Amino acid sequence: MAIAPFDNNDYELILSDLIADIYYSDISDGSRIVLLRKLTELLARKFLDLGVGEPMNLGDITAYEKNDKFKVTEQYNKVDKRLVKDFEKTINRLRKIGNTHTHTANVLVANKDELIMAEDSIWELFSYLFVQYFLKYNLNLKSDKNVLSFFSLLPPEIRYRTLKKLVEVKGFDNIQLLDKFLLSIVKTKGIDEARFWLNSNREKIQNMDYPSEAEIIEYEEDFSQEDLPLKLRNYSDSYGLLASVINHADVRSASHGLYKNFEEATAIYEQYNLEYYLSSSEEREKFKNLIKFCFIGRISVF
Image 1 (cartoon, helix red, strand yellow):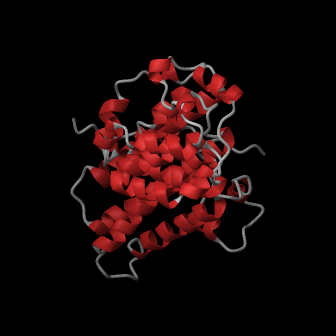
Image 2 (cartoon, rainbow, N blue to C red; image 1 turned 90 degrees about the vertical axis):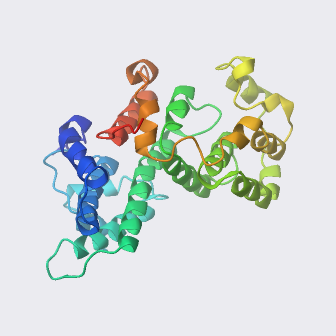
């Protein structure tokens, strides 16, 4: 029997209520953790593409021996093997913290460290949605520029975690990926941390193959010369190019980013018509679906 796919519309109301209760209400840390566990279930459903009516418990994902008769196991087995264990580990961390403050056998009050750990793990789950996307559609010089532009609207922490994992998986073989990752370090950790990462990995980056003339021509077709994000023709090696990026005045001034969370990012996100920019291809439609999910229920602070 076919598995019902996840549909944002089916979960918009419950997700909006969850976001409001977790982030915009005055509740205890313990109650917030319990609700973060429920948000974990929705994120897991989105990640596994399990829709309304499909049974799913977090324990089905984290069990050492998976039940092959369960649809959740069928979907789990489709996940890229380079990501699936991290996904399972994060789900298990949130499940354990959430269970502690859901069941009445525990009478201890939640502490800030538990809440911080739970919120940090939620950031991880959001990032896995995009790691999974870019493992399928790739992030390189041929990537859709509209997709990359809207990816930049996400909170810096999600972008940083997504790109960090992609670099871990793919290694140092893609100047576009490394450029995006370097910029995400600037936005989340600051310019000094980004410069440290660049210099620490200098040898690996210098040993990368530089884009060919044909690849440069194809990349430049999507931009005017004034708007080129990467001035590939001005350099002959990846380290020199990335060093120029980090030394650019605009990049230095953006250290630690213009916004840090969904609430600050929402003001910019709401200015765009996603139907106009993210249509006409499967790659764009899939990304539009993901980013819409991420901003459900978020309220602008501006």
